Length: 128
Image (spheres, rainbow, N blue to C red):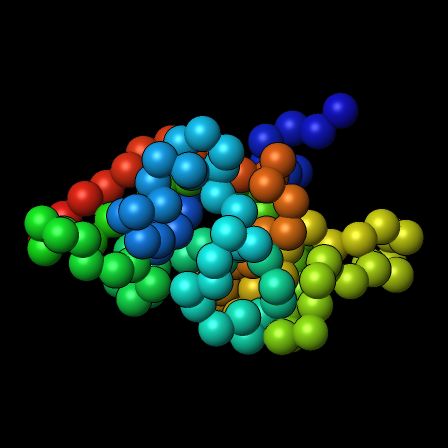
């Protein structure tokens, strides 16, 4: 059994197109439904602990607003990502796989998740 500290659950932002909000509410965030971000750290769903970074991946809707999703994300163990990854690599130190790829292991601002059961969209944030 895992405790929350071991899982390292964080609230992170996800920038998206406002036209995808209904789909997100029904089916969760799925990176395969349309890529709006360069996938420099892996082929998955991108989150950030910075609203400013996530906003760069949001588009302006017909009302002139941006949309972000605030999600609860299981981070777990992390490793630096690369564009070719379709899942996190193996962690040879404990014979499992890493949970998340990131832009910087020491001070991550971008988190890439590969399994949509590891995050939960909680809030839709709409702003100018």
